[in-house]
Length: 192
Image (cartoon, rainbow, N blue to C red; front, side, top):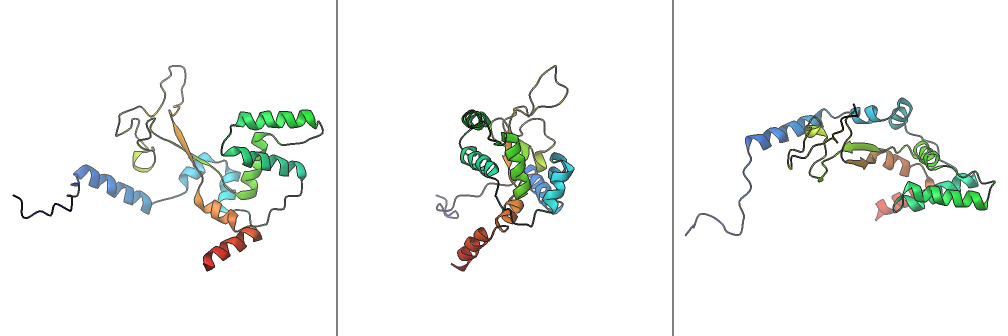
């Protein structure tokens, strides 16, 4: 009978030298954080826009731009680029004078209006880990051992097997504070 141990409290996992070293590495990376991922992925104009986001209020007066943005935003959470393009094609067939923007044009307009740009990171094919920070140099998943990149004899560049997209929170918050209606809602929420 073990009288010295409280059975209601499970024992904490023991740290190994490897896990301590990994934790120290992550702490050091947080201390030395920079915008290098953003700078590497975005063109100079997009990176400059990230550092100095738009301050003016956007005014949507062009009906074709309004239509393009509305459809893009309505479909983006649940549909594909092909769905947007099919819808655009149908609108242009019905209304030949329509200057509805293409998928890429809408995406570029949204980037310039909001200052919000996506970042893409490689991840394990099994979603074990993202290859960032401590794992950024790994060629295989440290947990399941799967390769990070596709193997193809005819391709000289490494193609990731899987990626995830993230939208940095800073530009999203800055975009929310650009419009008086959103500012009023945020201030009302803060008063509660």
